[in-house]
Image 1 (cartoon, rainbow over the protein chains, first blue to last red):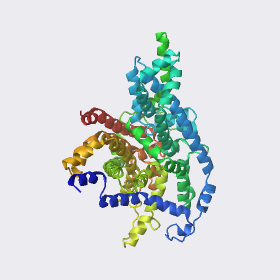
Image 2 (image 1 turned 90 degrees about the horizontal axis):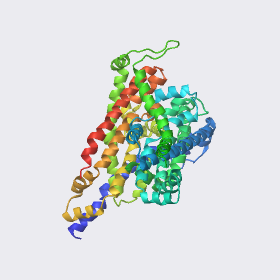
Image 3 (image 1 turned 90 degrees about the vertical axis):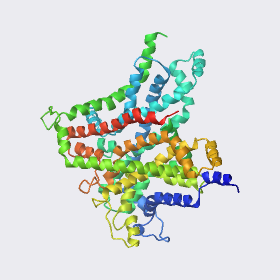
Length: 278
Length: 291
């Protein structure tokens, strides 16, 4: 084999040392998770004893499910993420379209005001936002958790970029047919931006499914608590240190996203990429 | 269409977004700044102007100073470590490596898990006597160690969790950039007889610069925002050894209900992040997009 072909192969065919290191790191990365899975699926006496003949069981999950209102938490989180996503999509689509396709006085200023949210995120402004929610009488409601996130600078930015890349000729064609601005948006722009909508939806759902600090602050009962807060309350107060139950509850709360991720791995990864690159 | 009517249509489209941003981003910033110069209202006594008192209290507050120092350490370790690991992971997964789909999944999985769930898992991992770490070090004959209960190791332990959570996320962006690189660069370098390291240093790394800046800014913001795991793992303890700014802000604002002081801490946090954003906008972005 000539020197150059060897070099070429060496550039993207890794040596055994690389492969070994990559796999070691991969195992290390999965280790905490595998440990939790082991504990959750085995009886308590095997929770820290690794015996391959240990019997498998689902009773930890059943006990966790019965020990706290997880059904309600799941319901809350589902409604919450759905509500936020729909609001974000509608509100950002309208704003992004205005920024992308129209020239008007104050456009740059308005856009700069939108972009501010990328740095000054709602997560930081919890004290002032809590006061606002108290004044609106919304404390301990799903709406209070969602409201600060309804307008998403990230979504507006992402969609504006996408809309701007759509050729204007399509506009003109639709306009000749007598379509108004909103009809054009709905019939031309939204369908063409579909992959971006999917990408944003995945990122948004995983963010809000996992969000914790603001929901913790603005809720104080089972009625509005999402899963993350419920899980924290559950493992801090109710269970002492029964690891079998805590790991079962933990896996249960992460399961929907984790399963969705494993099933749609490619879409997830591509969505995160797409959302990041724009 | 009538010109004025046209303008009204445009602003109607912008209205929902702008109103919400005004109510939950711009107004809170102004209100926070305003509150930070006032006292916390107590019972019937309304708040009154106190000037810089809250900021003076902050300077003399050992817990705030501890939180700030911890946070700088936390950010200073998570940023380079998670980015370095992310780059390494991306280079590996970009190669024709055995089982690379599985590897990519292993690296990325922490990203989709809620931080609260991650914290539970790691709490268990670190637990004295039961934890896996303890069992491994016990098998190696090392003495028992309470990683989260010891002030000297608590911050390091929670920092490691953040690195674990973030590296896979940043890997995705590097991977995307690597995959969009022209394969003929690789071939040209190989024909020139360049070593793999030279190819990385002279070709891949400079081309990855915009990605690195993007990831860097995200890592920085997360370095000051990621505190969820503290609620489960240490509650900022022991003796504030692992507290971070946003966690301390939560304690001051919602455990001690000192909203004025909490507002002052918010101002500091916002200032730090805004400073980074400006730095990126005016310095980094101009340096990396050379043509």
